Length: 156
Image (tube, rainbow, N blue to C red; front, top):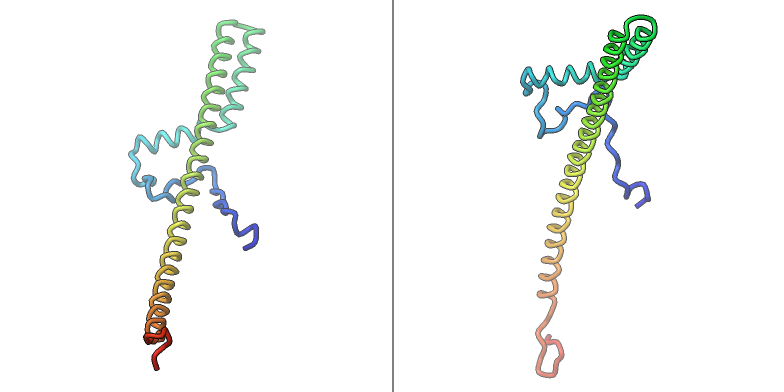
C-alpha cells in the first residue's frame, strides 16, 4: 500500500454557488420543499451576497454625505438603514457558508458510509472464502490421517 492509498479521499467540492442537498437521500430536494421554504432560500441567496453588503456600505456612505451636507435626520436614517443591510447581508453570507459546509460534511459522511459498506462486503466475502478453505483443509486432514496401532504407529 502506498501512503496515498491509506488516506481517505476528500469528496469533490460541490460546484456552483450553492451545494445541492438533493444529492443527499435524507434531505428533501427542491420539489419536496414548500413554496415558503423555496422563497426563504431565494431571499437568502439574493440578500446574502457581497453585492448586497457593498450596496449597504454605499448607503452608509450616502447617509454620511447627507448628514454633513443637508438634513441630519435623513442622513442618520440612511446610515442606520445601510448598517442594517450590511449586517443582514453578512449574516446571510455566513448562513450560506454554513449550509455549504454542512452539505459537504453530510455528503462526505454519506460517501464514507458507502465505502465502509463496500469494504464490509469485501471482508464478508473473504471470510466466506476462508471458511470454505478451512473446511476443505479439515476434510483433507481427516481423510489423510490413518488410525494408529497400539504401538503408536500408523496402521497400513
